[in-house]
Image 1 (cartoon, rainbow, N blue to C red):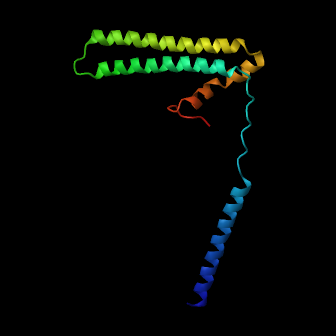
Image 2 (tube, rainbow, N blue to C red; image 1 turned 120 degrees about the vertical axis):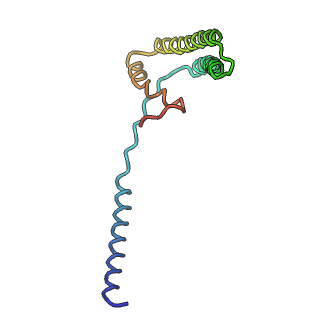
Image 3 (cartoon, one colour; image 1 turned 135 degrees about the horizontal axis):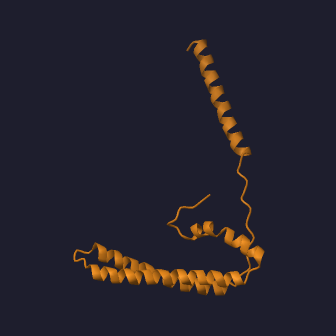
Length: 139
C-alpha cells in the first residue's frame, strides 16, 4: 500500500474517532432535566379504593352492554326493535357510570381547599390518559 492511501485511511480513522467522541460527549452533557414531582393531595385511600371498585363494576357492566349492542348489530338476524332496546339500556348504563364518576369527583372536591382543587383538577384531563392504556399518552 502506498503512502498516499495510508494517509487517507489514517485521516478517515481520525475523523471517525472525532465524530464518535463528539457524539458521546454531547449525549453525556445534554441529558433532559427531570420533570418536577407534583405534590400529593392527602386523601382517604380506603374510601377511594371503595369508589374505584364501584366505578370498575359499573364500567364492566357498561362494556358488557356495549358488546351486546354491537353483537346485535352484527348478527345475521338483525331486529331493529331489539337493537333499540339494547341501545336504550346501553345509554342508561353509560349515564349511570358518568353520574357515579362525577358524583365521586364532587365528593372529593368538597374535601379539598381551593388551592388543592386548582392543582388537582387543572391536571385532570392529562391524568385520565395515565389510567386508560387505550388512550395515547401526552408528553
